[in-house]
Image (cartoon, rainbow, N blue to C red; front, side, top):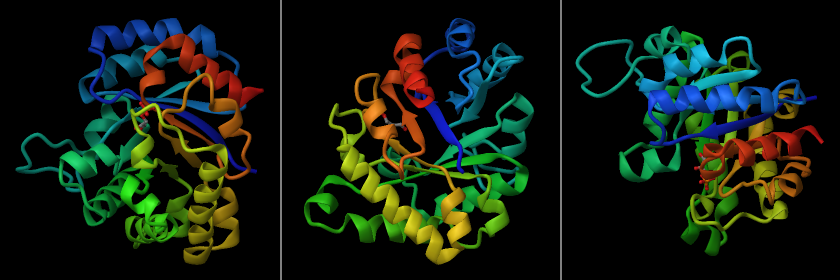
Length: 252
Ligand code: 13P
């Protein structure tokens, strides 16, 4: 009914040369594993090389951020048409590291998402609670609110090009993973919120990934959960064998 998407988020890792070599090595390892889409979200300067290396393979390329204006005096930012022309098909928006270190808010996440969709990019929209919120029992309210604010003004038609990545902040890069039950439950809350904003059909169709220390050892049990439609993978996406093992888990 909905697509499973295994996406790597390389964060600030890999030079263009390393990106090209990685993709040439990965391509035969994930070839034909079509029960999921395979995406690599790479640093801006890697996109063109990565897209070239991924030509004729089942690997798709994405970026890790996009600005909401089409052009202008925004030093250090990047526009959607630049990403598209370089060869990106996807863009991650609202990653917790952007929210935590670079002042990203639900308002700017929403603006960026609207601009990316209008330009024709597919969006991987990241949200999730911090540790204190989970411990104080307000996870459901937090992710429901983020879902509403981040998707404000986006039509049900546009939503077809949105993947939501549920990434509990306390699980990112920490080696701590949400249990499959926690991941399933919170992805379910996000799905219910999508149903309330849009429709049951939209909720049934949207891909909701889990992200946060997903690796070759825990992917199968996370992906087995009904509400978990894939993964957004940081550290384990930097190794061809580990990333392939996650793709394999999605194809089992
Ligand atoms: P890790 O897989 O390294 O925990 O990172 C997850 C993440 O932030 C993906 O966007």
